[in-house]
Length: 73
Image 1 (cartoon, helix red, strand yellow):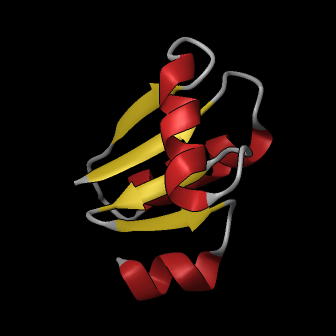
Image 2 (cartoon, rainbow, N blue to C red):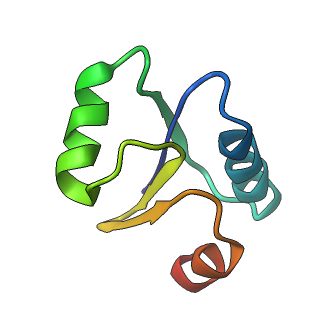
């Protein structure tokens, strides 16, 4: 399962979602502005407060990193 943690104004979040769509991957989106408790959970797991954070199974990708996406997907 793939989850993209995002905000409405995040430009890199849009890039990540577009990349996943282009690759034919299904994903869910969690807006951390609407669900602030998710931002805290992510901080506890990753140590960062930025978005996008993409969770692929039990792995986290912070930001937009094409090579990391290629590796994990």
